[in-house]
Image (cartoon, rainbow, N blue to C red):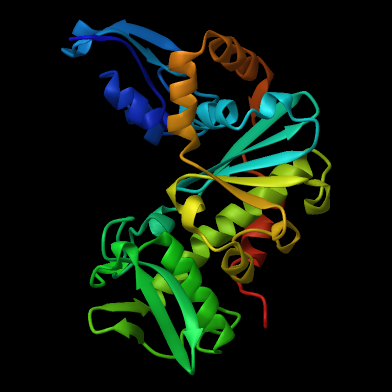
Length: 309
């Protein structure tokens, strides 16, 4: 009863669902959202005991308020260098701060990095394999909470693919020598899992270079690469480079920023200055569509393969 104000950040679809707005236009060409602007409601609208509820603004159909909040949380409005922000998820959303503008895009990475579409994939739960490393002629692993293994999460999957590449059990085309590779009795990787991973990593890495190409930049022009989201907090950067998820040029300047969406929502809630900065971010932000971009299509195909050791 004492909540006077609350804020929400999330992708465009989730915000439509929260607001009780039909999200089906987001799944049908031309994929026009019903709204992307900031919305304010009274709590009773949703039968919630809050005085005022603010839904943060989205940048475009597929670059949601989670990215708006990420940009606020990372203070990129004050950055003087070229900074790339990547939020790893089903939509590989990314934003480039170059000069005074924010140029954003998203790629349909699929849910493999969140544990879905993977035979033994799970989210970041207790017992999820979250670290994998080479030990002898095979691999060893750790789990979240040191619990018995129940599956493998995104960070563990990135490590596992990198390790199997170095062991020669996956070749540059993505072919897994064994039909199933067992980490333990109940957790394994299949050839189909590797393909799902390849689709995700190719979409994200191709999206990165396509966004930079749109602005006339190369990977070498980026001072910092910030990885937001749960996966980014635990992902081994060396493994991510080995599998081609992020460019090799970023290995020394990639930093995890955690749940930027949540932190940005908190800043907006508690700091009036941050509310004004959010408005300024929205004025400076534009989104580009890569769905019909020939450069992206070519890069996606090329990046399906892995680099040889």
